[in-house]
Length: 181
Image (spheres, rainbow, N blue to C red):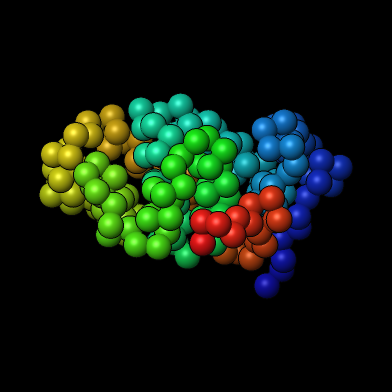
């Protein structure tokens, strides 16, 4: 199989260059995932748009972290898990919540448990979300906008986990957090 190239601003297709600059502006560097995505300006633009949209969704920081990390775990993408642990900690998500999510998500309680279970269901749904799954997350105190925003977050992370599986993206040192493992 032909390998994807890890692009820089200088090697990326012209349409990806401003998108990579946006990554530098946001992170201080070009994350490896974005460097690979740059091969397709449309994928990188769609991913960044979905990321920005989900970051401004009806879910709070803790809830977004649960969606992102759960999707990464289920899709067996260590890059996604580590990157979003780093982001979650930077955004003030409790290390205890993150540790529970990583080590034993069945110990999550209340709304977090319901959100984890619903996200898990969405990731595995193959396009068909059961009415019962929606009912359960609504009973936990979420609303229909939250439900749709979970779909947005899972969709965004599915783009990246698929890309990372093809690229075999290594985790850069910035995202390697020992204390949450």
